[in-house]
Image 1 (cartoon, rainbow, N blue to C red):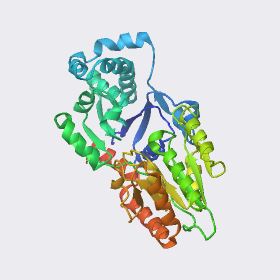
Image 2: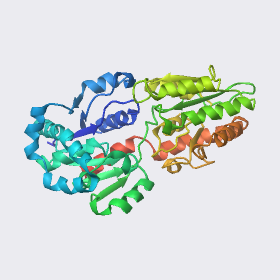
Image 3: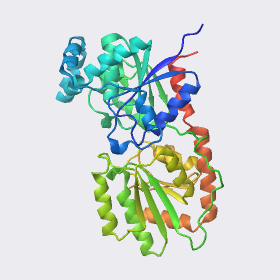
Image 4: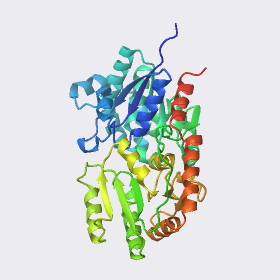
Length: 400
């Protein structure tokens, strides 16, 4: 009798508003017969719990974070200080801080995996989740792997320590992989797979064909991303103002919330709407669940995201999967997803004028909109379906 395949799946602050990708991948893994055990550092703030599946996810997640002094004291003797000391000399006191925060979590992860018969943990982040997995490997031999979802500098100190002990890693773009080969070649695990985040193309599909805006009809624009200045919502608002001044009738809906559950950057955007006199034209929807995102996408004529930097962009994938013509920025890994003029349009980041020009052009060209609609959907089916990520993990953890 074949032993059940069990996987510890470690995601920081799960389930967050952008974590639909993880939930889809988990579902694909479970369809493959893999028993997925969810772990996280901590639950998200209440204002960011937005999905219909969030409560279900939290109920089955083991949260490892603790401020217990006895738990820290129990973990300290097993800490791999000789290996961490060079990291501290290079990266400073932040290494010690992260290690002390993560040691009790690593000790608990080890205990839980032993109790449940789990031999491999996949850390879906190279921040503290990867630190917890790396410490657990040094403290008790737990096999682990990591996924890098963005530029390495976004994920904190002690990166060589996190990567050296991993059995394999996945990296979401060729661009980030090249940077890792340049900066960390000596510490990379023996197996690296380039595997993008993906979306469930079978679920994210239209019930009726895409229709460009009719003459005299407002152009309905939708965007979905957390409310943060790097997502460029303020630039998109400036573009909408330019369009209104040109006589182009547009309506913009923005789904997403700030990292403080609505008490942070949202206020900046609310003030900008007032300053630009865009009340009634721009609507902040807050955090909405996946079903509502799909419904809004299928009502939209255009999906536009004006990010200053985007490692790749699941939001773009969701729009393209729903056959919504998509405008993005030529930043980060987005050109590995969108080929300008073929399956979407790319404009320079932080350039509201270029964004307004692109929207004006598409609004006046129904045939181009229809072409981008069909081509975007095909790109997702062929290269960015979430089953591919699940298959990659299974192939690496349990090779034939």
